[in-house]
Length: 436
Image 1 (cartoon, helix red, strand yellow):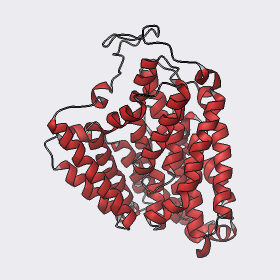
Image 2 (cartoon, one colour):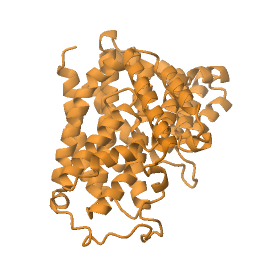
Image 3 (cartoon, helix red, strand yellow):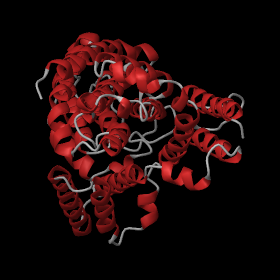
């Protein structure tokens, strides 16, 4: 195959893949993002743009293994009732709307810094919905705060979100060093997110919750307009289980999680640690299919497909585009953050991060670590711009919709846009001015 033919075939499959990712589907079809990435990978292989052996080598199995292991760990925590118990302890005695918002965002941000933010939102959304209904509060500010805080908090560590996991595998930055650099702007971001949400929803958060007998609350089991139980479809999974067996499972899950996080900070290989933690938890009497049902297999497929598509783009397009010369002169913080934030809202943050895979290694060695950190921070903070900015946002909005609560585009953007702009500038300023 000639170089010209390979160049144009690569552009075709790359454009098809990333356009589909931007739209969320292929026009006229129901193919999702995972399917789009798989089609792109199959297309470049079928056209001979990459050998099967090279495609296998292009896939970063360490990142996929890390994400899979963390999903298993979080699935066990959820089945053991960890999220329900923690939410009950943290929110159970809160009555003020502003205090509830603060607790919700702090809980979401903190958990997202340790675990995968998408799964944290999946577990906490039904709990926040249940509590706001019980108190007779408007659930929208609390749900928006939950989503925004999950994105902000997840920027603090390499296991906070999928794009950080990719960056950890590509950059080789140790877990502790990454957290030391990005935990401060992530914590400051949570404060900014809380203040902006307070201002944006000041009317809803100023109202006092009505008394239980005047709140119009429904008795247990009564159905809402959608014909579902008040607790929603996740009520069974997110209730607080009782019995010695569940208590033992909770203790085991917490010990394994704490051990894994400790090993992360100690510098052990994250993929091996996460896989080992998942293996230990799977040595249990819980039916494995119940755990597997909570794993986002589609996200893993999308990762694998994108690694192949980006590798082909790197070989047939970037190798002859002069990207090395551009990267050597590019600003590692402000320019990179701007490009990353823009691309993250066009094609989502994981595909955007992979586009920088061949770019940052071409930068001067002295600024590479700062560039990787800027990419992680900007791609994560950019997820707050709109509802479509991150998977975590979509999880919250879709779960709320299924329970009869509508979070409109402006309902989210009135918080997301100012939070994104302020935190992006602040985060870039932190990386540019901090002494290392």
